[in-house]
Image (cartoon, rainbow, N blue to C red; front, top):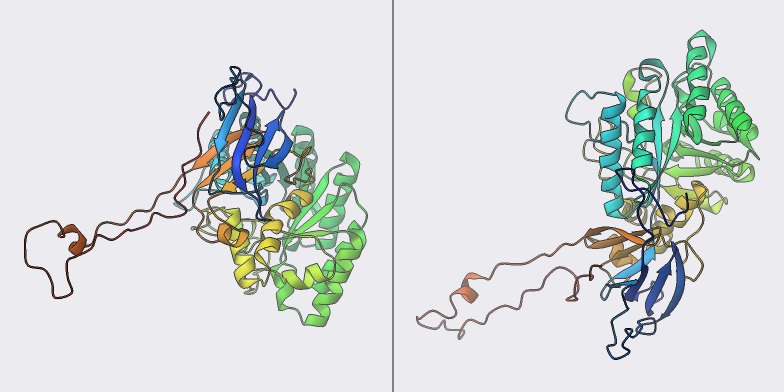
Length: 450
């Protein structure tokens, strides 16, 4: 099915979206531009006002005709959209108590979680889904249903995550992993730290990945340098690629050991996804496996990047047992990287956008003609401002506005200002003057709708 004709959530075909002009947007380099989008791609980027066509009558500037939707982004910063490389939608939104893991329940939670993260700006999501054991393939079925219903709104990729893959206990889970790939999981993964034979677990996952041409995404604490070195030796060169994370335990290693591990990961082409908002311990909460030692919030990002490792950042837990207050906001992950990880705002944002897309095997996005129209507009003047409280957002996926969040902060009049017009004696300082209290963000019109 062509990208311009995605099915709606109800399964019906939707007509091709009209061309879209994002007018008056600010770019990170300071330019104010118009961006014209057609067929899911950026068609042109020009100076502000240059892409606004005359109407058919030719006498009213600003009317783009019936086949063009114009969105006014004055006061907004336009960025490549984030992508979420490490989410757990099957356990999302379950912090309130015991959760059901039938296909219908997981589908509902996955849809709600994906739309929540879409509202924050993430137009692609890699979903870690537990398979085998008590979960069977029910959770995966629910996630795949949600994936299909969300086509045209967000892109969702499923990672099959078995618990134990070695020994007698692992035979059924290994069969479930293979069935999960046949069922529609695009990536294979899991947590080798929880298997009695971590090296055997990795070997089993890599074998399935090689046989079926899948990417690999492994969850590891990363506090054992010998284990990471073996993993790098086993996984080096595998295509379409190997990702590990969150690797917070790397920060506990002596710096020389951590550097050697980083060098080996870089040489093997292994990417790392860190979770600045905290480790997602959903897989460890079942009571299996060794207790993990306390760890810093995130892996040593600067050390890994200096070694040449591609480092992306994800959100991990979204209001589940691992993190009851997890927000799933990629801008918060970038904010934490900039605040606690020593990254510049621009590099921190790249970790949740360009580098996250690279880890997920997605096409790069640049604010140039010919690139996919996966975009996020935030009410801010700079990337640093976007990582501060930037509540108002407009999200574009496949060349279509798919989500908007508008926030206005107003202040009540002060007592003195409210009484300024009433009769009574003036204060010794003179008459009260009404305060010109601001709203949050720039005073610019909200984006026009279609």
